[in-house]
Length: 391
Image (cartoon, rainbow, N blue to C red; front, side, top):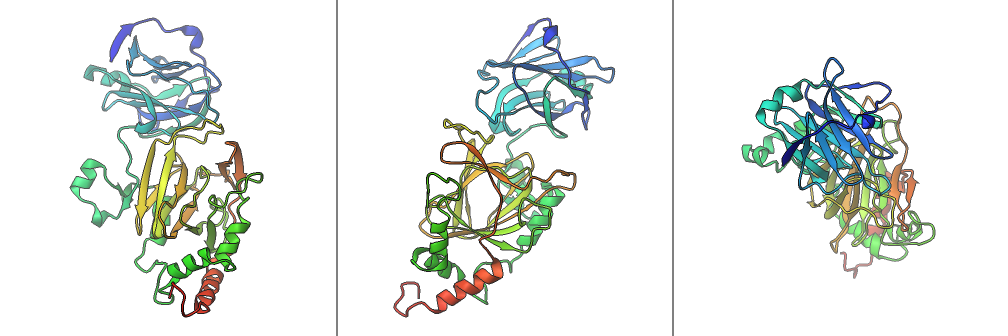
């Protein structure tokens, strides 16, 4: 890192309609969109600028009485559609970060650590102001990578916390914890006493022409691209319960992923979500934002989840992903979604990228209700020939 003294370019210091108050003095993440180069101003209680973050097409530079230059920063505003930006202030650790897309270390393009004697300067920041489109102002700064796998508190060790291996359940929002509790029980299983061969029966239905899963998947080959049918880009949605207006579609969905099948890259409407693997395993790629472009944007992370492992989605993290079954066996997951209480404008769609890289809307639907589906698959299973390889 290097520091150079400079006067701030005054003509770049424009304002939003009104400043936004930080929830905690000296810390937070400002997430925003902009049509071009901009300056994000961080102000003290008197409205005087303490810190500015300059975003240009080639770089990000923070400014106090000096320009705080990150020599590793080679990127600025993105030319890709769908890109948005964030800037994090952390007075306790004297750290500044900036990035593109989701506010997390994996998407950071700028980092600067100020000397310890600058802590009081950062703590004097109480407001943010800029001529940009604000998206969200988060209470906590970006400090470390977030774990993707959730564990109950009695499964978490001190080493897990120190290494950030798992996301403690208690760290999730109240909404996510509610969703988690609804699907985390030991009796919440695909293969139960009532139908111990449920997974095998689903696999047979998938691979056998004429059976329901096989035929339904063929019918859905055009679901995500009207002009380019793609059987591999299909999965089945078996819903539990009714749409109660608190989620994009019906909140509890059992999703069936045949071997080699995958979803389009898609976002989750700023809802909370919990995903649990009920059978098999699923591979997940995470993206910084939904990019409607043939060039696309590279994933910043990927993970493989096995039976009974759980992952999470929040309104600002893990929102854009692609799921794929990379095994030779069927994968079954349970996905559950819910908007947080302060979300007053519920969005009824998942946005996704079609085969041409164009952004489309998908209204979460139901291929069949769970009770009806289980009865149907049970009947198919009972009618299998004695010589069937699935017996």
